[in-house]
Length: 418
Image 1 (cartoon, rainbow, N blue to C red):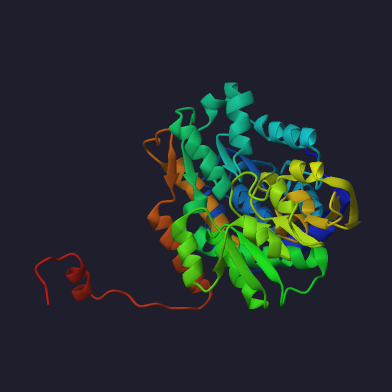
Image 2 (image 1 turned 135 degrees about the vertical axis):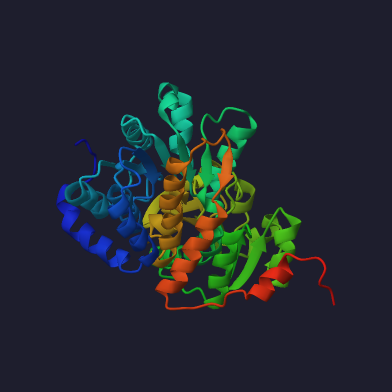
């Protein structure tokens, strides 16, 4: 079995951490139990490009339990947990190609190593696997039946490919499932991003000006957590609807050019490029702390920051200090990569439980389809979304009401009025 991890000797520690995470992933555990009996993925090869974390390990174990042959690489150079990668190789015999801090060349060599397994299905977190497959390994496309994508950034890329007519197989947008973005994006990103800030800086949040760039589900979650820790939260937006929602939620809303002058902490969560640019860095306070929690580090104009700087140094782990020409210091966390995985451990397992159950069940759904989907991006089927919500509630010991026969009739009738 081929693999490329930092050190297989880390496997023992990784196995313990995987076990700890799995204890709080009851929905995925139920899926795994059924998969182990039914083997719905028997003979299927899955190529996965995901953050190599404890929760991802539970997903890989679930897919393998279903009979699939799985190969895994990292979806971000800084998101790999090396002990987890080692455990998957040693204890689960799953080919993993991921090393925390890998360079650009190694990152793409790992993606190609996964593609070398000639997957029938892809499982992506940012669409790098899909884009590499289409751009460089197109000879493999004929054997690919479908895939899933878990991030907002990836869905944007894939919908663009579909609109341009270049997407060569169907993709299910796991990111858009309600049991994904309502919980993973909001509660998972909110907590884990704040965790990354605190681990990297050990700074007090209370009483500071915390600037959240983007008020999508991830931005909502971070704004909520920052306010809960006592920060004065400022939101920047380009869309009038979420901007209005942020105002109604009690946050201050202003353009980034204004927020740049008053912020102590900054975090981008937009999925777009150059959200904070050199003209913004130039007017920031001395000692401002800047990070990104979007999938790619392009949200921060780091080249622009470098051009405005006279020196730079690593002042503590995951904190790089840039000294500007005006003498002010700007601290960038985690090389501008998603801070919740660069400096912390990513989302809590209880929210990833639902996200990864969506992944597993969406792949099963595509495998079982009698008629293949056309080459487009599709939502997670509603029955899967609701099944996951029901199972999560059941695992939490929570019961809900059911419609009576009379209520069902009322909801589909037009005759019954006031």
